[in-house]
Picture 1 (cartoon, rainbow, N blue to C red):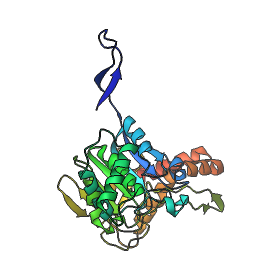
Picture 2 (picture 1 turned 45 degrees about the vertical axis):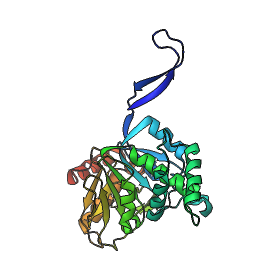
Picture 3 (picture 1 turned 30 degrees about the vertical axis):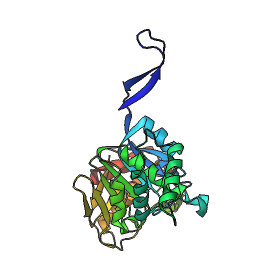
Picture 4 (picture 1 turned 90 degrees about the vertical axis):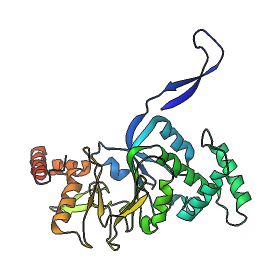
Length: 317
């Protein structure tokens, strides 16, 4: 990645000069959480795949620019409520809501402006002014424009062959939304959305052998869909083939190892084997459950339990 710096001395010349340097950014898998308290489920889960970050809003382009300055993304997982790209606890007036039709309008506005050297608040002001001149009624407002630009900044920083997984409810009910997001990059990536409800948080405590264990569940290492009403399941847009693919499958996102996700066939109700695997996975990858087990039955017993589970499920790491 090339970046231009202002350097005062180059070969004994003390005047300021532009110098292009090659800066290697760290390549990570980024998981963004928007909901208040949403980080808790990821903090209590063993995870060596995802760098988890809490943002209040995808409209916060300054925060996204800071991330982009340091990282490039192999994969991105964005956890939010359907088409609301901000923390819903902040109140409806601050919600960053965006649908496909508004993205198309904003793209029309952007096409009338020069390509900026940097997407910042100065550029946002220009976009807002242009939008107001182009659309006399219901012009995209600053919040929607910032949200659109925030998504563009993230997706454009995805590396080739990367994946953008939007964990939200029924977002892919309009597949055009995924197509519009795909237009934010010229790389070959896949953009996933769910046609069903998705788990956002799963925080109930449980009683096990008469003892209460604190909440330990997480959307990672589980079937992400909380209900299976639409048999289309997860849909993705493939930017390489310019094609929308209906998988008819649910999504399982990993937290340990090298495998990022898996598409899994299912029916409305999980099979007994699928339910058992999910229950075991939630405990196996949980720091909270490990502490609970060791406290009550000792570390040797826990290690024995874990080794048995690992033999049954060879994809657990």
